[in-house]
Length: 154
Image 1: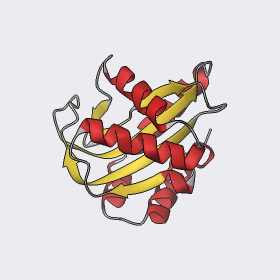
Image 2: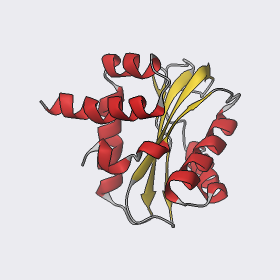
Image 3: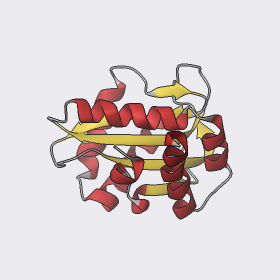
Image 4: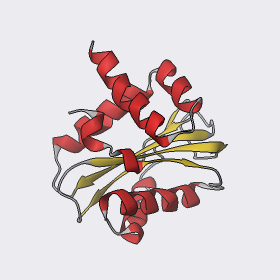
């Protein structure tokens, strides 16, 4: 599994005005709708439902929200860089500015977990996060994410 296989270039965005975690989840729903044609309200509802189980802010300014959706056939993702970090109730209590959301079919099984591990490994690299924070062009951000994995494999 590769990030390039789960993240379309059009599912990458820089958001200038997310003022809260809830607003961010709505932005993710809108982005998923635009890139994958899924229902934005159903996506937001699934993300919020997952967050009630425990926050997906993994630390160091990174959040990995994820949800299962009826409307998709394979794991896919959306990536947002926030110009202004927000409180996300992350495990380290630090504000979040890098958000990689994953969406999986209801019956995804281990594919969902493999994708989550892949994205988590990639965003655990401080050099990757520094490059992502230094860029505001969605195409460049997509390239950084997809090339980071290739560099890790080398």
